[in-house]
Image 1 (cartoon, rainbow, N blue to C red):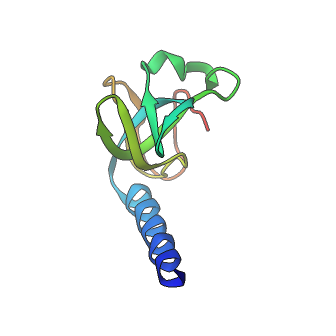
Image 2 (image 1 turned 45 degrees about the horizontal axis):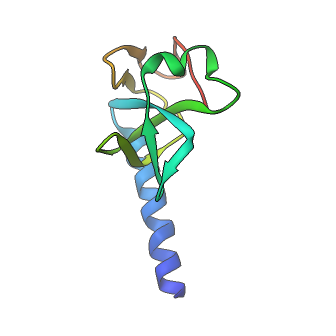
Image 3 (image 1 turned 90 degrees about the vertical axis):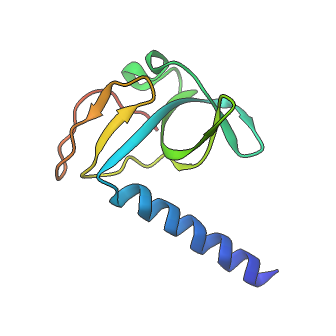
Length: 105
């Protein structure tokens, strides 16, 4: 049981590291109140504009998309990478500390 927890933690750290270090990242606007087995329902980008709605909608970075849901990503915005929404809009141009557009989380 203990080794399973260590493997899960190592996988989580690796996942966050890969998302943070990539030069280009895909972001999905998700409904935080509509999750299924650790996956979040992807909604149109405009739900995340202006910081979302009462914390319900937010950007989810990276991850695996399947059947309208996404998992294995991060809610932590990666630095230094170009971030493009699932709808094709550029959220961040990248660089060190520079960003533009809306954000959530």
